[in-house]
Image 1 (spheres, rainbow, N blue to C red):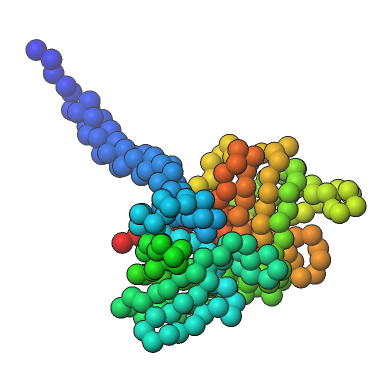
Image 2 (image 1 turned 90 degrees about the vertical axis):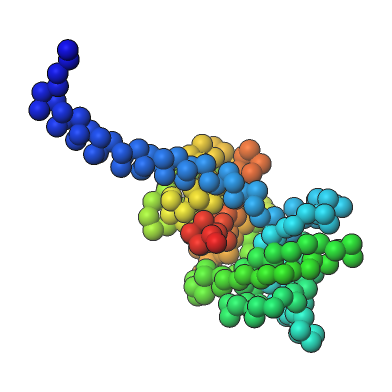
Length: 253
């Protein structure tokens, strides 16, 4: 007959005591790692909706973009506006007309150039009928150092990746119009937020060819606040510390 000594029994209890919380923590970390794969497909950008064609008319969609400056109009109980791909300026990108006639008041953060999320369906007239609107101010645009009215699109070779709190940095070599190599440093969110936005450790490394869209520094210092990054594998993800992918993760209802 097998017997456990008091010492062995206590050790087993200690292992159980610490093993259960450890398993819970590991389970949570695993969930965090898998969650970005879910959220990447949960939202659609304006260009992605356009690419869906007629399929977009039969699906419930959540479309993310920016409120085009000067496009907000109130007609009775309905509010119409243009949702655009980029924050504004000369390169607003694709646009989608949105009509909101929901029962809830629009959020106070809904205004020109705010990042917005429209929840609803695309009509046969290619007008998006929204039943819910979420919005948040573009925090980088509230920083006087960056010019959100004139975003830049940078294509180049990664020379350095520095992932740290409170901000990460991606440095890349970009050819200017004269063919000269110019060094750009782009600011992004901290590692934990980038993970939740859909980044993985293998997405970005030196020598990769990438594209970054963001707000350039007003002092012409070849620095930008990155909004999105298109990796060498073709995936595009948000680079900001705060966006709807992150907010949905933190405040999902």
